Amino acid sequence: MTIQDRIQQDLALISQDEAMQPQLLHLLQTLKLNTTSQSNRDKVLAHAGTVGNQEAAEVAGIINDAFGGIDGEWH
Image (cartoon, rainbow, N blue to C red):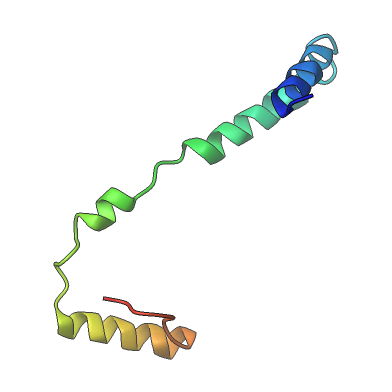
């Protein structure tokens, strides 16, 4: 039995149990909230190249002082 089959089987059982329906609805709404949040990747990448070397070194220094360093190459 595949995962999809198991989900469909469980949903069929829950759909007949009025006490469990609100719990399932809440769970599904929570899952949708977690998966539909939009990434800010494009907004961040829109600023690529706008920070100069001096500013980047300053930011790296602040992060290093506050958090103990940046792993790997960062620029």
